[in-house]
Length: 250
Ligand code: PGA
Image 1 (tube, rainbow, N blue to C red):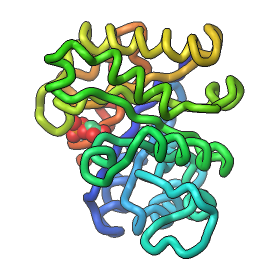
Image 2: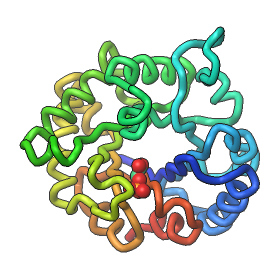
Image 3: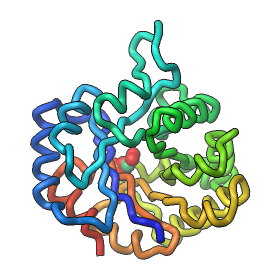
Image 4: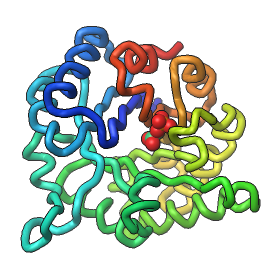
């Protein structure tokens, strides 16, 4: 049984007080939800306050990135143990916006995944193709390369801890969602790639989230797909009511 995950990626939104308002609004409405793993991912400056507000609750906190070194002369970077120190349990890694705007490669994604695991953080490893890549019929090869590249030298034991997020770039923030069938097709193939690089039992237990314009109107049909185990949500996670509706998918 794979426990569904609904994760809110707040991207570069919300000051500390706005973040606290949002998370209080969510917390009060999801009390008692135990069958869904709930995660929020604020900006770095709000992590510690949000994590303190959520201590003892059923909502976990993720960072939107991490660096792979433990400390040192790396101006502007944040180490995994600093993220856990702030109260995080998860780290989003390799989001397409990091790949697109900040030079993230499969190699740096792999370093971050390993550093997250070493610090006891659950990596949420993001993969996904651009529209051009999809139109050229390269979706699976692109996603497969990102997945294998991000998971180089990851043991089966560690693979069992990782969450994968499939986020087609053309569906992120555009209002265009992959149809449930399109998403399911890629999720199924991601699961078989995970089986190839670890084993079938681990692949069977791996949570694969869909991301890209998930909203209250489409969450139910996406979550009804057998290989869609959750959602990584941007825009619709910024309002308490819509995020809570996603957590309470039917
Ligand atoms: P979106 O973003 O839900 O706003 O499309 C998803 C994501 O980038 O994680």
